[in-house]
Image 1: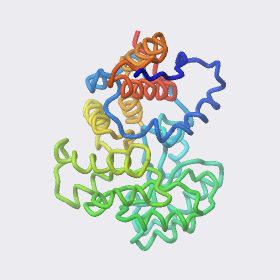
Image 2 (image 1 turned 30 degrees about the horizontal axis):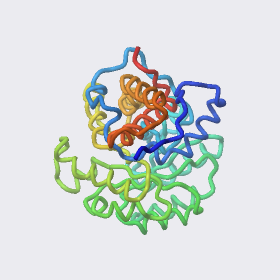
Image 3 (image 1 turned 180 degrees about the horizontal axis):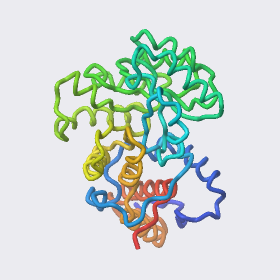
Image 4 (image 1 turned 90 degrees about the horizontal axis):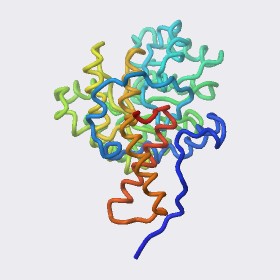
Length: 334
């Protein structure tokens, strides 16, 4: 029996369907589908991410947080750098009042962040963990603050911590659960299903300190896979990988490719110059856009008829690649 789909030509780079603002608005509605963990883009594999593009991707503003690739952590003790961070190529900026701030400076750093947000700034804020002495003041101070895009809850180890943070804020603010311990990894499924949970992120450095595990790909495969599976179980967007420390961009590129291969769809970073590499590697490769465009052209040319069991998975990948290419400004390889 043949299965027919109402297929119409897909024009990933057309502007005839509205302004970029309206296109991004529609992308937000598709965010969870587009950023859900999946196999490597297209049929061309990880090798596409191993070499820099001949020209950098365009700087994109207002990328929906569901599909944000680069998450730039900025110490809250450096308010003079906040505007520059927002002006960078980071998809999301996170003002850090947790690990980046000495306990003696927590209060002043929190006040600086709140003042900047109240004066028109927009960013995420990494708050202290729910078991700390600073968490209650963090959520009380940030509650209802204009410009707060969401909070990153440090050292999340239970669904209850996410739920309590969500309700203490206002029951509307997004909570990104940063998982940084063995307990957190083993509780990842419950955390992902918690009320208020928006995305999961991997605090790889603290996780290694907690477990004594190495930083290599094999050792980190288990916790990464746990977060990817948990995100799927909780119907969340793909998780955000931990940062790469240092200024060696070839290493950053290699580790970002591992992020993609594991099914993660974002990556934390500590320096603004890392965002260009992260955005490029986590975006569909131009060759994948060519593959997706060709597949959709062939699929539509035959009236959207499913020929065999491989068509539906490839159709899903092609649609996802083209939507992400539109969101990130990726052009097909010439």
